[in-house]
Amino acid sequence: MANVVVVGSQWGDEGKGKIVDWLSERADIVVRFQGGHNAGHTLVIDGVVYKLSLLPSGVVRQGKMSVIGNGVVFDPHAFVAEVDRLAEQGLSITPERLKIAENTALILSVHGELDRIREEKASKGTKIGTTGRGIGPAYEDKVGRRAIRVMDLANSETLPAKIDRLLAHHNPLRRGLGVAEVQPETLLAELKSVAGRILPFMDRVWKILDAKRRAGERILFEGAQGTLLDIDHGTYPFVTSSNTVAGQAATGSGLGPSAIDYVLGITKAYTTRVGEGPFPTEQQNEVGRFLGEKGHEFGTVTGRQRRCGWFDAVLVRQAVAVNGITGIALTKLDVLDGLETIKVCTGYRLDGELIDYLPASQGAQARAEPVYESLEGWSGSTAGARTWNDLPAQAVKYVRHIEELIGAPVALLSTSPERDDTILVTDPFQD
Image 1 (cartoon, rainbow, N blue to C red):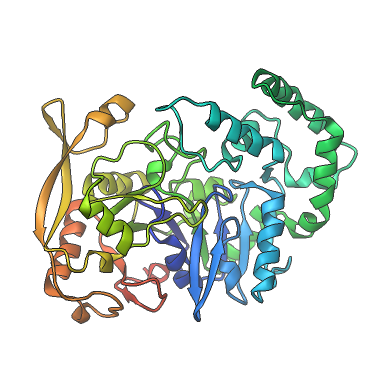
Image 2: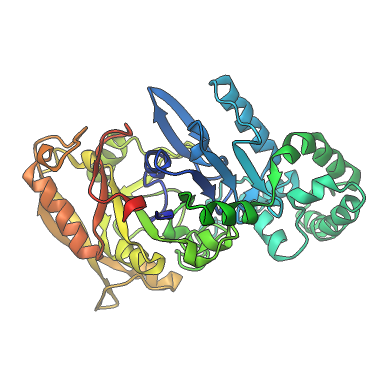
């Protein structure tokens, strides 16, 4: 039995929620391994829409264990709010169904405030496009070895000293930014107010996962954001604050790399991006508007309108290599229905030279010009198709050509937001 990692192969928003939910029916355990509550997943189950930001997608499935791994930064207030919201929809999140790694770093109110203040004060062209939820500052504190972790909530004797250490860093920053300092007792009260809701879920996650793996249970590792937002391999500095690539599934859960058997790259049939940063194939024209309106391209978490453009095979091919992607799940093919001509980026022209990769330099990324190949569109509908025979011939040709360009096969093809409107080519759990 295979253990599967799901990652986004573009800038996020590729439709991971539906695919993870579809796969979670075949899995025994679903693990979130990085990011925070800045990642939005929309699930539609039996006509009910669930919007998740922090919780693993497996929580909507009875009989599945869900895990928040140590690679996540965890906002306790967002967690409580999300659990309560799901309870109103009839979903009970219990400690038997959900485990939170004891060594997971917390996102505190000071992190969110710092995140928003920095973004507000940033000059035009230097704004990152952060969601302002404190993800970056929380990761900074984790790397700086001053983070407060879930396990610290259980130790009232050592918690005050940890708060003092944290504020010894944050209060000088706040003074420099012209905002009031945070008093230790205020932060202590904040943590005590949520500790009782968090601690019942705390557990030794690495040990649980190791036992489950040895018992032959199927583990699904769920990533957030996308490869091009990775702190190392993305369009830096317009990236998130964590590693979003498949290798992080091991580090962010406490299992070794040998536990990963299959890497599924979720790939949109066109390209979108939220916020600032380079986007070589962006279409600020009628095509971009068509894709945005038909694809309902608005962020689950922020509600921000996504920038839209043609499929960029260069970027996805690079993501295939960086993640070791075994196969892709191609989503939103139906959004392209009705276009007479569809363009695909096959390379870039940089300072007169043709290249087949995205350069790492911010300046070079801005100068890279897409080289397009034009393909014939289709007039028929792909929406709701569940077999290859249901697809127009030109749509099949488009999919096959994408496989050739990116160097990875299509394992699943999604043709609508409904979970059953999926064409299965290869089951990642049985590969």
